[in-house]
Image (tube, rainbow, N blue to C red; front, side, top):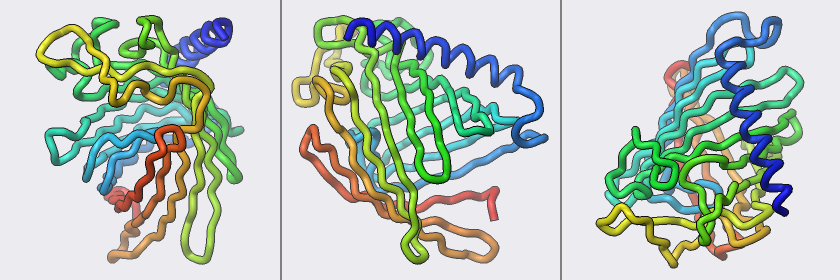
Length: 264
């Protein structure tokens, strides 16, 4: 198992390096011939991330710049309650024409640093986590693996966790409704959640001990149904999703709408 952690660490570092190189020096001959900009905003009734409920009604903008397979994307999530977790994710990656993708992401969440500082990079106190990603997608399925390799990602005993999440999703269609079935899990113990109580010293929250689970477990099962409606020249996708976490034995239903001002 220790060898697995070391291997995943190496893979994550290589993914991050290659993703950055691809973003700076895109491979020629692949993908579109011009820079493409995409922007959308999702409004959701609940903020669910990898089987964890991070808050209630949230606005989630996503912007992506891509060129010949290389891309940079920025994702954010903002709730309307002070108790909701705010997120900022920045990703550099590359999608090959034969389906393989690699990337590196900086995840930031509110509530981990007691001052909620974004530009604060003390490895053991920062609210940032850096994560490597590798995957493969085609019209039949999408398989992705993610491993955290730097930042706020530690086990209960203080060791680096290299928290890993693997997800398989399968799209299909029934009538005029697009469906997406997904299942995700972790192969090992993940990081422990931390919280701060008026002190820079991290304290573990025993109500939610683990980012994913205390060992191999399925932590996310979901089924999303999406149907697009026309508003003038624009299509507005509306979706409803059932989410369950077998590890925590929790479930919920999420509804949302996607706004894409640059797409007709």
